[in-house]
Length: 86
Image (cartoon, rainbow, N blue to C red; front, side, top):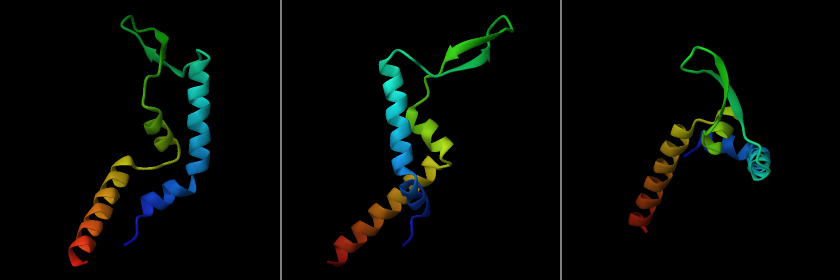
């Protein structure tokens, strides 16, 4: 059985890891990611981005985390079936 989303994730794992470490390093220096959002007065204001780093990296590298989860479940099911046979 193939797991295409896992294969895609594996291909970018080194780059993704480096990006994640860099973002964490920035955080350790007090530097955060931010984006402009319209505040309650209708004015663009800079707000800290509190999104999960893993989700941001997945989006950047075009990895579907829902598909990753589904493939994991398929892997576990295949392991359970193999254990029953053995």
